Length: 418
Image 1 (cartoon, one colour):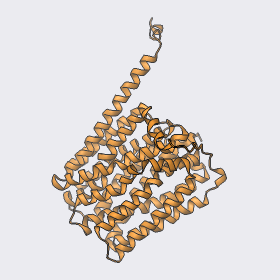
Image 2 (cartoon, rainbow, N blue to C red; image 1 turned 60 degrees about the vertical axis):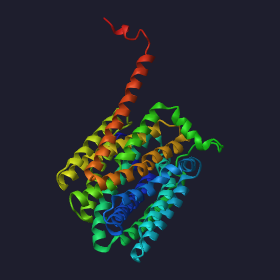
Image 3 (cartoon, one colour; image 1 turned 90 degrees about the vertical axis):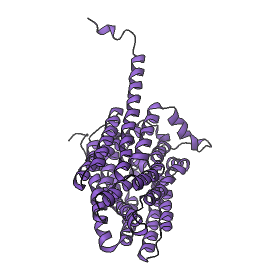
Image 4 (cartoon, rainbow, N blue to C red; image 1 turned 30 degrees about the vertical axis):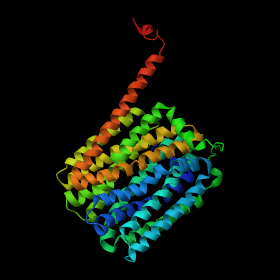
């Protein structure tokens, strides 16, 4: 069988073990996200979308605020040990949130505190996990491994919310948080079972005072990286507020319960899994793919905003998820493959900070708009972000084409004339 087969990264023992543990943990994480948003929206507030937006902002804000430290840590420290620490801390935070919920003492400010704690730990965890994939499979299979990671993450997004919706109705949000805490045992176990002698060697940069800002200077010198990160900012800040979009559409537009919210989130994940599997077949992504996927995201998000019923809304969400994951997977692989190994952790931390850290800027705005103008108008913001991101990528493509034409020898065209 050719080396381009869909699941080729699973040939590596270490990647197989890692993928199994990550899938279990991701299911628990998605269950907690749904339970947390539902707890804020329907138990601790009277359908206050702004409170959900604040919770999201606190959970993802540290990605941006801690950027210099998180990228530095991913490049300079042992990534496996760093992930062991962050995953253990995330499990402890889940236990804490579960206990205050089960004992009936949970308040909105407590959820805010736990969301901030999760955000701080995840800020260190995310770039380390993103770059750890290269340690497992190497650059040759990096694009495929990134796509399979996205498949796993979104398969969890498909399973976790649906299960969470049923469990919230049956036993309450507290037990969902405790189940998530237990799920971290899977990823911790997988990290302990890795064959350390088979981990690929990692080039470590020198410890120097300029290390914290070196990533910014590196990206500033690379126009294509700046364009991709600007596209990510638009999509991450105004497009990826699905917790606000789906929860408010479920409650306000379609008058549903937690089970409908879970079903809608799972519908988004179905399309995301399809997008990730398609991405796994590609050897190397390109800028044209980023432009097409962001434009598709904008169009599909607009269709979701106009959907007259829950079924058409779910169908539009599937297409939105496919476009979103195509863009996210392609941008992830393209950035890593275009970046020097010694800079990869810092550049990926910058990517995560822009993608996830931009959400705190957009989530409160989108939540306020959903409260005052309605959830459909809020979703139109996400649609506009997709179109603007596509325009940014198109401008970059035009500039690249002009540069290629400028570098072409003056007589190259005349050589092909009859």
